[in-house]
Image (cartoon, rainbow, N blue to C red; front, side, top):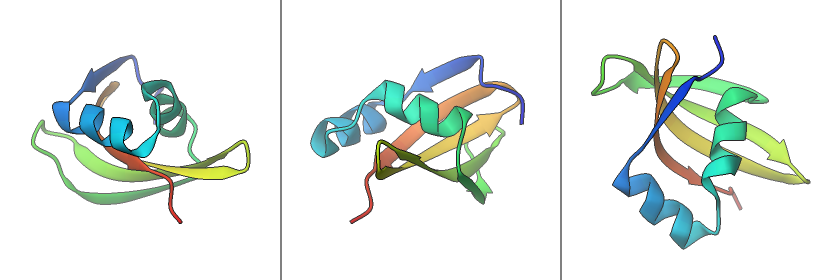
Length: 81
């Protein structure tokens, strides 16, 4: 997958990261360099939605994002318990 050049931030992801103590920068790091990536379904913007996981500073962070070429729509994120 080519590196993401443009991120689109949805209102939903802003709400979720505020609730869950995450940052947009953390989600961007997860999407651009995941330890694990699984395709989920076809997205609304013509791409595919993936579940990305990455360990950062001893914690796993999950990001859900739609990818189309080098564009990314961040959808949600969390730290699994």
